[in-house]
Each structure stands twice: as C-alpha cells, then as structure tokens.
Amino acid sequence: MEHLHLSQGSYWILKRVIKLRIKPRICLECPECGSLIEEAPLAVCNECWGPLQVKQDYEAVKDSLKKREIKNREQSLWRYLELLPIKESRFIVNLGDGWTPLTRCQRLEKELGVRELYIKNDALNPTGSFKDRPASVGVSKALEFGFNVVGCASTGNLAAATAAHAAKAGVKSFVLIPGNIEPNKVVQSAAYGAKILQVEGTYDAANRLGILASEIFNWALLNINLRPFYVEGSKTLAYEICEQLDWNTPDRVIIPMGSGALLNSFYRGLADLEKIDFIDNSKDVKITGAQPKGCSPIVDAFHTNNRISPVKEPKTICKSLAIGEPASGKQAIKVIRETGGYADAPSDEEIIEAEKILASREGIFAEPAGAITLATLIRLIDNGVVEEDEKIVLLVTGSGFKSLEAAQKTVGKPVKIPANIDALREAVENG
Ligand SMILES: Cc1ncc(COP(=O)(O)O)c(C=O)c1O
Ligand SMILES: [Zn+2]
Image 1: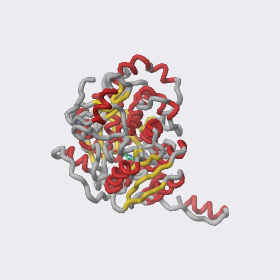
Image 2: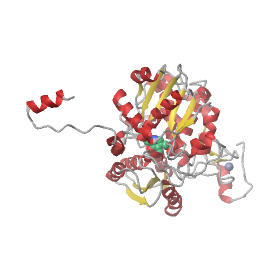
Image 3: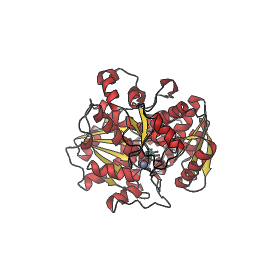
Image 4: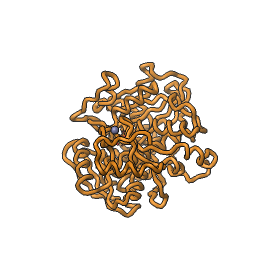
C-alpha cells in the first residue's frame, strides 16, 4: 500500500497495516494524510484526525460491472452492490430503499423559465426521507462488523430510518435526538421500536453525547463510528440520477445541507461513476448547496473566508437541517468550489412558499428541508446565478408528512358543511 504511517508505532495500527498487504476490496483512507487502514468502525484518522473515507478497488469494479447488467437488477439502491461497502450480501438490510422517481417538472420549467428541471423525489423512500439510503448501508455494515446494537444522533429523519432498518434486522436501536424536533418524527421512530433518548439542547449536544455513547457501550452509531460506511449509501442518489438520465449528467444539482455529508456523498458518487467509465464529466455538474438562513454555517463560510463558525442556536423551520456544527462542512465547501457550484440560504418564508409551490404545481409534498432546494433555485434564478439553458435536478429529501405543522401554516382550512345537497351547492358556488 502506498502510504503507511507508523510514526506513532502503536501495536493496534501495526496489526492493521500488516493485514493490508493483501489488497482488500474495501479499506479506509484518510484524505488529509493519505493513511490507509483496514476497515473498522472508525471515523477519524489516528494520525491526523482527518475524516476517514471508504476506499474501493475501482479497477475490479470496472471489470465486473456493466451498465446493461444493472438495468435488469432489483429496483433498490442495492442494484449498485459492487459500489457499496458490504462484502457479504447476507448482511444486507433492505426495505426497498432507493430507486425513487426522477420526475420532469414541466409546469415549474415554464413558470421559472428553465430548460429542463427534474425532481429526485426521495420523500418516497420507505421511511419518507433519503436517510434510508445511508441507514440501509450503515445497518448492514453494523451487522457485518458483528454489532447487535445500532443507533445514531439525528435531527429526526435518520432516527426513523435507523430504527426501521434495525427493526427489520432484529437488532436493538438507540437514537439520540434534540429537544425540539417534529412530533411525527419522534412517533415514527418509536413505532419502529427504537429507544429514543431526547437530549436537552441542540442536535450538536446530542451528537457529542453520541460520540461518548459509541465508545462506552460499543454501539454502532451510524453517523458517528460508522460514518465512513454510512455516507456511502447516499452516493446512490448520484448513481440513480445518472442512470435515470440514460447515464448522462445534469448541469446542476441543488442539495440540502445539514452536516454537509449528503452533498459530499453525491459528489463522490459522481466521481465513482467516472472511475468505472460510466460517465466522463463528473466535475461538470455544478454542485449547489442549500441551508436555511437561520442555520447556514456552510453557506456563510462559502461566501466569506471558508472558515465555519458554529451556529449556537439554530432558528429555522427546517428542523432536519438545524446542525450548527457541520461535521462535513469543510469538504462540502471544497466540492462546491471545485465544481463551480454555489451555496445559498433562503429564509423560512421562502422555504414555506416553495413547499406550497412544489405541492400545488407538481404534486410533491415535501418537508421544509426538502423544499429548500426549490426555494434556492428560485433565488438563484432571480440573482442570475442559474442560466436559462441548464438541466437542473433538485433533491427533495424528505416528506411533508414528517412536519405537518410547517404545511399547516400555509394551507386553507377545510370547509365544514352539513350533509345535504343545498349546503354542498352553496360551498361549491362560494369557491
Ligand atoms: C430531509 C433532509 N434533507 C437533508 C439533510 C441533510 O443531510 P446532511 O446532514 O447529510 O447534510 C437531512 C439531514 O438530516 C435531512 O433530514
Ligand atoms: Zn490522516
């Protein structure tokens, strides 16, 4: 292996390094210092504290995986098995995750004046958000590592996704959530049987406690000690969009950002496709990130000095995106810059309006964290960032059923009528 760092000389590292003499299909790599180590439930590099990433043997995948073969496979994210970090398929936990529709939005195209607009509707995943992708891969990997307790720190959607996959796998789950998330997300996670630990304070407080919990109790916490594997699941969004566009790329993708992990995974997914010769222009897709104005540490850093200042008290209707200390923010900014993308932060009012537009024009009911991508597109058109002839994909990452209180703010009340024809006629005539 190219880069072996033994300077700290710990026996533990030495053991791992020796094992890597046989080139594995999957290992972990530190993008900061280049260290390569055997796969393990580990998120940071022992040498430099960089964020570890899964490294695959793409040459082998290139030889074995063909587009025509994928075409006939099952309609879930597991159609891309060779690109996912699971070695034995018997560990796969699949609720029918992924392979969600990519819908052309002709009504919005006309209204907004863009050439080609698509929505990748990930609200249609089994638990109602894109988090089923990383949860399916993360829980499968936890089983492969031999864990019998899984969990996560979550702003709500990952909690439900983790709990559902744990239920399917028959293992126990603990989820750490902040105090103020939407009641529907809490009920949903509880229904799947998760033990819910509602931590006083913000998501960041829950996350910090999660780091300790993974150490103390030997749990597989998907976005903590299993983070390098968990984030791989979201790469399938990029695989699917390209496949659904007949292995072409869009010009721009707009992606909601909380921790920034989804945006990074999307980009790494495009890079994978280029490595195996499925596409040849991964860097031409302008990756564009969206955060709500009331919690926009990544967007603010993008527009100033690249340095992320934590937001202590997020204030936004997008509860899913209320992450003040984004773990993958630095990499997200790098990706946005490298691809010539952009970052923007609409207000809660703009997001609620976009949620209404999405539902009333395209029949897609999104939670605020999903509708934020349309709110961002509208702003970027108004500001001249987006050009008319672009082919654009918006990721809609969560369902409106998750946060009904947001939708209730904008919809009209039902017209209550007595059960007779005269009352019906009167109500209809009154519009
Ligand atoms: C609906 C929704 N969209 C987007 C995101 C952002 O994901 P990330 O934290 O990977 O940036 C989240 C995170 O919880 C989410 O729930
Ligand atoms: Zn390192």
